[in-house]
Amino acid sequence: LRRDTPIKGEDISDRPFLLHGFDLTESEFDEGNPVYANLDASMPGSPEHRVVNIGGLKVLAALKRLEEIGEWPVEVMIVSDGTRKGYRVNALVAPGSETSRRRR
Image 1 (spheres, helix red, strand yellow):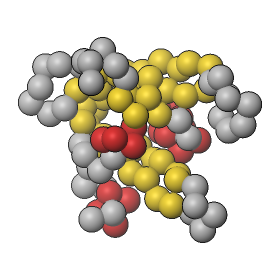
Image 2 (cartoon, rainbow, N blue to C red; image 1 turned 60 degrees about the vertical axis):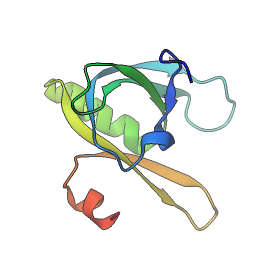
Image 3 (cartoon, one colour; image 1 turned 90 degrees about the vertical axis):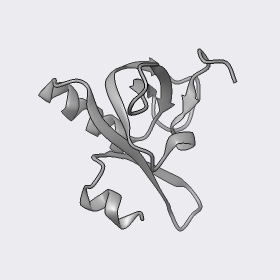
């Protein structure tokens, strides 16, 4: 895997990372969200930044709120839960939050 290849959000779920910012890209899919986020991320203790691609309404809503607050970097983690129909729902949460504790 090349270092400049984006990482899927699901590949680093349940692992805290530093979020330095993000931008949005229009999706090429007809179904689902019309955009997805490209996160500028680094793992704690590493100076290397990677792009993490992730979509989902909960993630996009959390990113909008973080943008309003405007303090970067911020430590976050991606959590994912399954639905009864077999879909995955991603969320962006603070490590140590109630949502992240329920996952462990």
